[in-house]
Picture 1 (cartoon, rainbow, N blue to C red):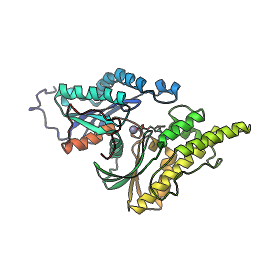
Picture 2: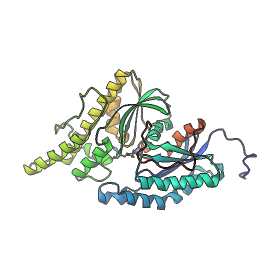
Picture 3: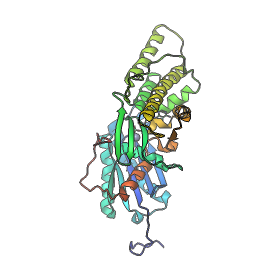
Picture 4: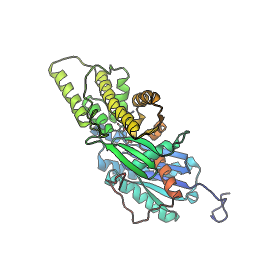
Length: 348
Ligand code: KG4
Ligand code: ZN
């Protein structure tokens, strides 16, 4: 029988944390024990947002409200953990959509207060960095990290966990945002990343010559808005000339352009700053073409690559739990007055 008295229970050396992630269009709850993931559930809102071709913030908040309680129960059940075994509650408090974040934060604070366990407020982008810790092979800082998602494209030096230096970032659209917008232009479904990856498999990647923005800029910044516009103009011109074209060829040419730029900047930064360990995280890191491209380039350079397991590339709560585990061990807790921060920067 589970002993309800914490004094009499077997001491548990690893914190058992329930984590909540509601920053955008996925409602996610996970239970972790140390760096072990006991359960990780993601309820995607893709179907709800698909008719609009992108995330509708108000709709996202409402869906989080209806999904959250059920997911919390299921995550605990799957992990075979009772409420009273939890040692902390973690929440991704930003960056993200304000209404969506507030829903998760309210639930996290309520649980923290009711269960009398600490609250850990985690930066969503930092949580992506921690997603690589769920793999068999563990990574120790310092390492170079490319964070590529729908909201961010950041090349960061991870000096130690919690200490980051941003070497470069996008000056306009994030890489994932470009995938989504180009997919929309090409009539492919939302989210665009997986749709473009799948269409590209039967496409000719050298069929169209597309720009590689900032490839030779000499710094580590990115720009994807011009590339997106180039695809829009290409399609417009092909249609105006009544020329035949294949969406697959355009998708593959676009995907190659993105991979060229990302890989080239990662390799130059690794060389300039002497990194022999590189991680790639975030939704776009699920892309197998990009993973293979980086792997080919890293091979000759004696660089060891680290990717999250695919399910942890895109938004999830397990990565929040992994980051929270680190903060729990370092006794960095939040309190009930901490709020959400839609613009929370990786470095404050
Ligand atoms: O990390 P994530 O789930 O959410 C944010 O924090 O933004 O990333 C979502 C982004 C979307 O733009 C989606 O199109 C992209 O990641 N994505 C992909 C793939 N899977 C998701 N992009 C390229 N290839 C994929 N397989
Ligand atoms: Zn994310």
